[in-house]
Length: 362
Image 1 (cartoon, helix red, strand yellow):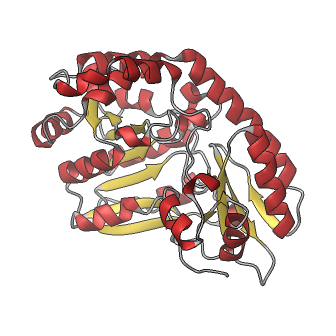
Image 2 (spheres, rainbow, N blue to C red):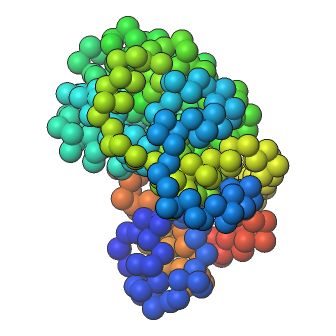
């Protein structure tokens, strides 16, 4: 039963119904969520403070801001808190009000959808698989001009798992400042990268006031259900405008309590060590196969291209889901097509099963 129906990484319930399976029988290799689960410190704090749901959060979220400041080395006054990064993306669009938005793709489709809903014209600078989805900065800079109001970059990028280096970002941000282009960098997966503190764009917010950096707790901290994200910027006009336009009490009490997760150094180090090890092992195990092209990953997931002429991503999805393994068919990503599959890294035993299963069919 091959299917051309496409599923989001969080659509386990839909998939289970479609394939007449129980949700518990499906392992979510498409969700890109930390396999260690939520921070033990956050779990304990939530369990011990469940009655806090009867109280409003702190009005200025001072404790939560302090946790984030310790974690990111950013100034609390430069933070914007939101109910997930989706709210922060919308807030950015509502504040910048771009007539023309440039997006580096192929990437997360919500950027384009929300930009168009805001009334912006959208252009995509599409990276190519022939170049391993690596950004040629010199070529990219030639596409910048004074008509562009907003540039959106996902770094590391979803679904390519590629990272734009700090030096490249510096060059891009400087050029954007010259053209009066505001830049939004989504770092939803940055903490999975090697030497996070050396690749994050947050330090650039002190140098460039045309920049906002978004972070999420959904993936690295395995807390998508808590609906919390934050952004860092030093642009005063932007901070003032966003403060005036955001919804009051937009961050819930439990998100504030779970903010202790940013102090859980043991959990953070364990996660990074696990992902770094598994990323290297998985890439090495798959890159020798001649029937697929494996793109070297920087985040906690890997993108592969199917090289057999008759084989599609739907075929691989179907084969895997019948074994209880949910991968991501990337056919709905603009610029990819029906030959690309993505899956994330879980624990070592699960990763062995996933790699072996993929290699069985390709």
